[in-house]
Length: 95
Picture 1 (cartoon, helix red, strand yellow):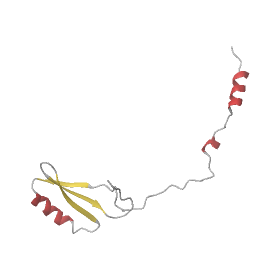
Picture 2 (tube, one colour; picture 1 turned 30 degrees about the horizontal axis):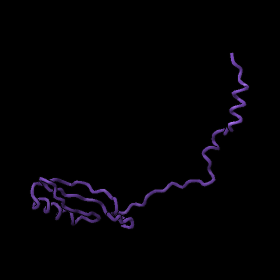
Picture 3 (cartoon, rainbow, N blue to C red; picture 1 turned 90 degrees about the vertical axis):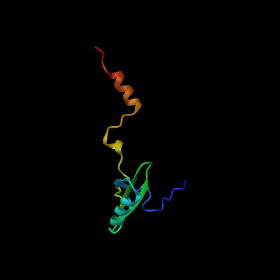
Picture 4 (cartoon, rainbow, N blue to C red; picture 1 turned 120 degrees about the vertical axis):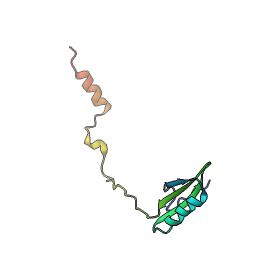
């Protein structure tokens, strides 16, 4: 299966609008919905019924977090080296 990553609607989810016993009923609903702007509509056949699926074609830009490249998460914590930890353990007094 070839994935078309350049397609802006790739992996955009479809939502079930309704379930119908016959194709004619589902097609009537599809005809009503297809006149709406910014909406894709399709009819899919299931094993015992038909479903009308819709999705919005409005493109929403993904928000990206601007990470500070100079920020170091470990700088918030006091970084102890292994040698420092060993020294601290040795200097502890046992009771």
